[in-house]
Image 1 (cartoon, rainbow, N blue to C red):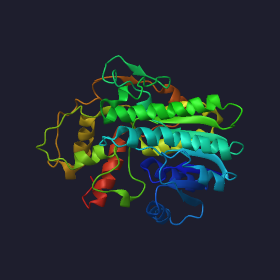
Image 2: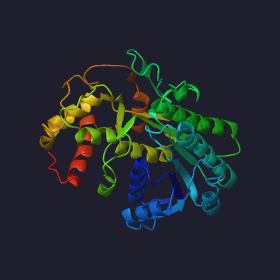
Image 3: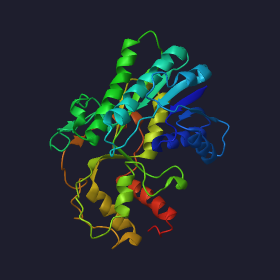
Image 4: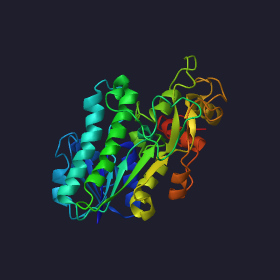
Length: 346
């Protein structure tokens, strides 16, 4: 039996593919174009356990129907990772809401039509964005847990791209939970959602390092390439982080372990801010000293609470593995970037 992964060209998805192939799973993945398909086949060495199908636009009502018509009897697990994370867009509905919400609806409907008897587990890549409240994120004393929900509706989410992204994620996740409740008895699959904060860490392949990286990793990449005289807001970025390797592991455990059925896994290994990234880069990479801003060392969120906190002790208990540290995560990300740029690491 196979694992279906949507959005295979994404940062998280590539790591999941790598880890599943290592465990000898057969994968049916979706990509947006022939170009993406050819690149992924090449990157994964034309592995015979990887089959890629093209789904050009997940916003379309029947986007995943052909994939499930073709492979329905093979697919036992579905990992829905496809969802845009773009904080520069101004087209909130078309480029955030519709891909997230309509895409989720399309894959769930395809499972019901063609895989209701064969698909056993559905793992949804949600986000901390579906948990946090935009109004209280920087209010000290606020505590978020696996049971917390972003209260925004789509009208409230129009304030800015960040809030619109958060709104798209909470509404997409609600699609999943509402679907399984409404379709009880009609589909047999069980759900787990993965709710990570900023997902940081290395790219699966060095060749994926480019001038501009995916939205989360670009936080680190941008600081590596920021002139030391630039004005830096040490708390511009504030949130919780988790290493992409841990997020990949959680996706796989989510369909392997029965105790994770029906759970929201809030993946965070602590709070950080822009200043915390600068502190690690300046301390651990001699090649960057004098080349990037220093900011105000020791004043970041890792040392001083500047807003809401996260209690994800239930997630740690359920997953039962140690998450990678902030220092390790920043080091892994920066080392790869500097190596590809032929700049000495440490």
